[in-house]
Length: 183
Image (cartoon, rainbow, N blue to C red):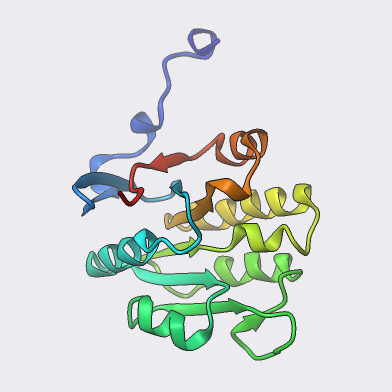
């Protein structure tokens, strides 16, 4: 089928100057601007996404973090210049959102004033507790559209035991899984 459409790959569309290279856990990874990535974990307490966010911040990216962590924990673990957006079903503050406010979250990313930023979303499974699966998947695609249009990077942390294989395949079909699992 690919030959019918011509020989096209993502590398043809993204020039070498639109990537950043980072090293995490002995893995050297190329991160392309405007791309969507997934980091697989096997436990909910892994820390590789904290390290990833620090490495990208060192390269000059502004972290835009969506997390279920408590605010003081998130501020201690993520880079100091992070824009933190937290989820909570009880508290209502400017940076704390209901897990049902998916449209607003896409708008926040689309209106981000930074030109060089990445979005790390470490709680996609949490959204599935409060929203229909198709709504969460649609949200993930809309979030990617908002990020790719700005030539930013989108990273989803995926705890493998919390997702069905079919759901993972649907979610990850237009992204790349980064080989960063902790050993």
